[in-house]
Image 1: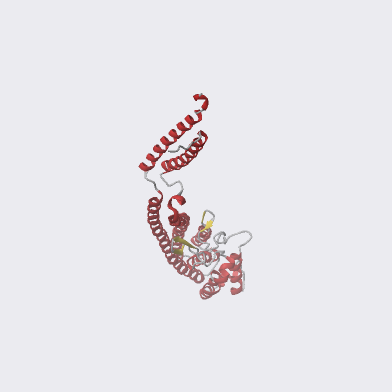
Image 2: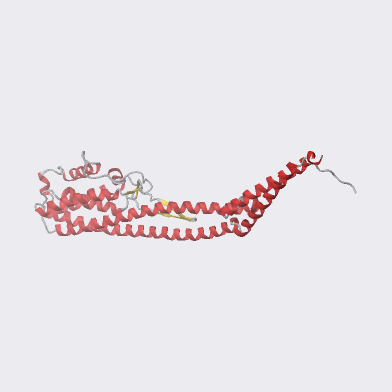
Length: 352
């Protein structure tokens, strides 16, 4: 039988390697013990780590959509509130126009109604320029710019100049002329239905009144769902409301004949009634959009729950097993330290 000699230096080197290995394993186990997750997913899962990465990517995508939906919900809420206020203003003014139809241009009531319409027109512009976090809710895709220009300004706005120019071109005298008393009901009706109404649609509307885009904003509210999430300030409901209010604000205080004034008020009623119906439709559309986002959020929550379950199944460690492993590795490490210390004390001097 032969014996192989092993030096204390060799034993020490072996133990040092063992200590390094145990320390590395212990560090990994302690991380897993404190987090409850695998310390090195790629190393542990191997080829299956690709699927785990895909699950995390899906989760990140859903989280981003959820965050975006929160912004969309706030913007739709701002639009809904503005539409509610616009409806209230339209209803109030419609009732005022009905009451004013029985008056005359020279009455105190007519002057008050003209002032009321002017104030409502300012309110209209303010509500149309509602924004949420700097995003104008009626701007369409051009949401960074206030969509509606105020009518009454100094110097006069483009819209006001357009109204006064259209009036003078049709009647042959300025809006401030005493000749306004000669305007007949038929003339007023023709003017309001044609030249005046044309100022609130098409290129006249977009050049003098609106900076909104005809294209409504859209958002991806689900993994495979993109929907319209805004109402454009160029919607006919808004054009009609501006037309009815401007009609009374601009002409309601003039010294018109009874026939012309009656025609003015009846036309204002008709246009405002169309505006009111349009605002109801716009509010319904916004409500539908809000419901779509709410339903999409519910679907996202369910998908996130499923993904969380799958990710946890792949990455979560057994708490008991890991705790036991930490304990065992700690014991092994202490033993290795002890043996290393004893080997270092070995010396031939002790045996001489």
